[in-house]
Image (tube, rainbow, N blue to C red; front, top):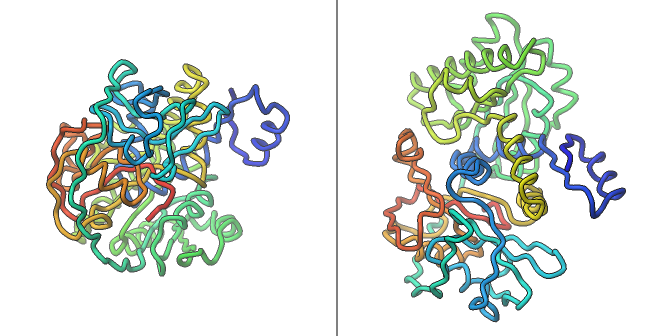
Amino acid sequence: MSEVTDAATAAALLDAFPDRLALIQSDAFIARLTAQSCRLPGVALAYEELLSFRGSQLYLHREPAAVGLPFGDVVCGFVDACVIGLHDAGGVIELSPPMDRLVGEDDQLIVIAHAADRITWAGPGPAPSAPAPLAVVEGGEDIVVCGWNHLAPRIVDELDHYLPEGSTVTVLVDERHRRTATRALPARLAHGTVVVDSAAGDAHSTLVHDRCRGADHVVILSPDDATSATDADARALVQMLAVREVLTRAARSATLVTELLDERDADLAPRASAGDFIISERLSSLLLTQIAQNRQLAAIFARLLAPEGGQLYCKPVRWFADHPVAMSFGELTRLAGRHGDCLIGCRVVAAAADPVGGFGVALNPGREARFVLDPDDQLIVVSRKAR
């Protein structure tokens, strides 16, 4: 098992040791997680739970009763587990496969469960009535990235996978990083534009204030040029507190995500909502530990973190229904399945600032758990499509 940061190096190592090496591209993982969390904060907490050996985890499970059934029925068949994909006898992994795909005799189910002995088959539940999705045309969004480090180009590239058409990503850097940032970043994205702006000293603080007060989403990066992880986190936290004050004064409900290196530093500024902090070293370490404990998970996590195929998303309820919904988790699973998505949890936006309630995130709550969700609440799914 090895951790690498360069995609070309990863490809060369896999060619040389195709069956003996498990690789984790940690930079790509953190960049994708930061980009998703900036717009949909529940994703970070979902990954943290899956990796942390607390709560729900990934398992491979054989279920004889599922053989011959369509995958869409199988995802609704467990009382206390969420099915996200299939692992066939040849080692091929399909995350969020087509719902009409029949489960074969040699297929193992990829499930999220609280424990290996808490995966209980009960058969598919009744199908709920299918509300029509709300027809919403999303306008462009304004994303501000404060600071510069080696992950910045990757984060901007990842953001482009999720942004609505007409969006703008503004990268604010100290004057000494302007040339580097301008060279490293594209001028245009598939769904919007990139702007690099810079200033030095007090003028930089004014620049951050002016750009962030109208932003929809703000990302604060831990600087590469700090003298230590503690220094980097201190600078990022000071920036975060200043931006949080700007957003509060402007009465903006923008998402704010800060990258930190040391999880102990997160306690210095308590979370205001899910996904406030991306603690890169902790998440990378948890990922490596999970795979060290179970080599079979390496390929599953690699697929889950790959830019193509099934990925973790938080999708607004309005994409599935044109009105608030009151359903059991099992019924919501069937509803998500009609759109080709594998449901693993829900996020209630009204509880986003409640740490006792998990910041509104409920992962694998059980088929009978009931939810009342507004159109802006979110379904946490594994899906092959971002929208």
